[in-house]
Image (tube, rainbow, N blue to C red; front, side, top):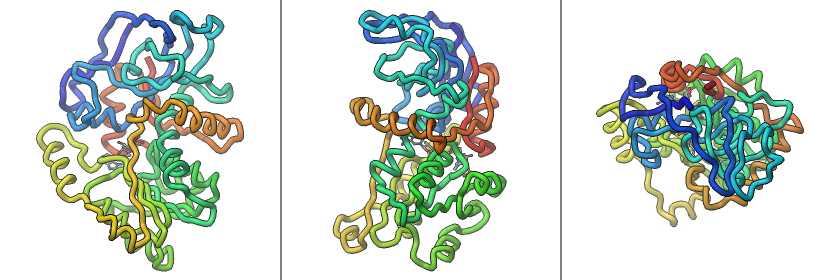
Length: 338
Ligand SMILES: NC(=O)c1ccc[n+]([C@@H]2O[C@H](COP(=O)([O-])OP(=O)(O)OC[C@H]3O[C@@H](n4cnc5c(N)ncnc54)[C@H](OP(=O)(O)O)[C@@H]3O)[C@@H](O)[C@H]2O)c1
């Protein structure tokens, strides 16, 4: 099979499409013929050598695919062969074939293309955990979604709108029109102005009850200041570090030095909460994740989960696909086609 191999830490030139032995499904596993694989910001950080959870290189990245079950291992229902599915993969998804536990596979909704289906797992599960499970957003509350035009950002917008909360989002200005069409109440250009006074102005000086912040570093300080009493901040990324080579390492160190440190007494007296989410550390909590997945799949059927594919790149254009995310050009999800 062909697979996208990240051969070393570095810029986009370190990725090659190589031939690898076909995986064999072990007991309890299925073999999926990949039709579309999701690209995530974690893949960019892993290539840059800034992602501690990434596998040792050379490696095949990829947390999620949509495809068709081609073979099943011992103990798995033979009737699954030929079924169109979505699968969560712990790496190795950016390949023509991937073997994955049957527990990490769920049926692809008929009304989604393979490309749209591959845009679901990481983005929507992350947004669900942040907003519903940990953030507890209510219909009479307001949320600030950073990078609202990105993969997780658009998923978060769908979920916040479904709850009925008021939505604020930061994004590059070129994405604002699209975000408004998708139902975002207020889009804020955070790259050409200080977003905090703008948000405070829009909220009558009160702030919002939930902020989800994947930027890291001193952005977390500022997002915390945007919280109204009883507000919660969910931290889930370190995008500010993104860069190849020594520049990335220096940015990561700077982000760590600038990030806030919270005192429980300070949180108590301010009536504010801070929590963190790493979906990649939820593999041992299959039942919880399955529950979230069921809600999201229901949302597809009900029409409020609307995965948006920015662009689909063939495997041999993997460098362009990474540049699309790294260069902030994407609105929604970038997917890879074998
Ligand atoms: N903890 C978890 O479980 C988890 C799971 C999924 C994703 N994440 C994190 O969530 C964030 C979003 O992930 P995603 O996969 O959905 O990607 P994405 O948001 O589609 O990523 C690209 C977008 O991020 C924004 N951005 C902000 N700072 C950037 C920078 N320094 N370089 C490039 N782009 C930057 C840009 O949009 P604008 O310029 O329009 O803002 C860009 O278009 C990432 O930080 C990722 O690591 C965490």
